Image (spheres, rainbow, N blue to C red):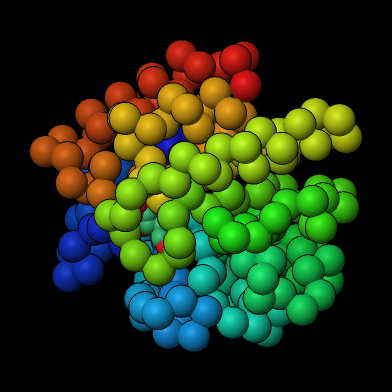
Length: 220
Ligand code: DX5
Ligand code: ZN
């Protein structure tokens, strides 16, 4: 059970300090947005390179951008431990996964709430993780969409059938109130932005989320 706090809810004027606040997490989730794939603009490659120099934990880059085939490999080269592209935006996902692996990163495909998993099941042969969005991508602090949990179950079931070590990440509205249902459905990597950075004590919030998720192991 891994917790990946989203620095979208951090103080952008104090990113180094705010990375240190989450040093007890498994990775730092970095939301890259381009004003095209989503109606918001955040940070890009130079900032990711700078974060990589100072981060005490691995970077998990979530690219909400058009044309990831062109832009995503540079994030792997910049030192991201894991790079997530949206399947809705990818032209040749199998080639993209190969490029990410060649650059030394894990590769993850993300599904927006309106995107079905079944047409992409074959990609379980190559990806390391599937991200099931539990909000419409673009902004932190939105309400959790419980109607995405059947998709988490469907992905978990497909992974079980096929074997292999593939993780399932959920992102959006994950908090102490919603993390257990995600773990129960089969997720094992949990992104939490406002629930961690909005807490008085970010380290305690991370521990609490991990404990809640871990208590659900085996139920999924
Ligand atoms: C939304 C981003 C999320 C966001 C999550 O598009 O992908 O990672 O930061 O924020 P919370 O946990 O506040 O919903
Ligand atoms: Zn994200």
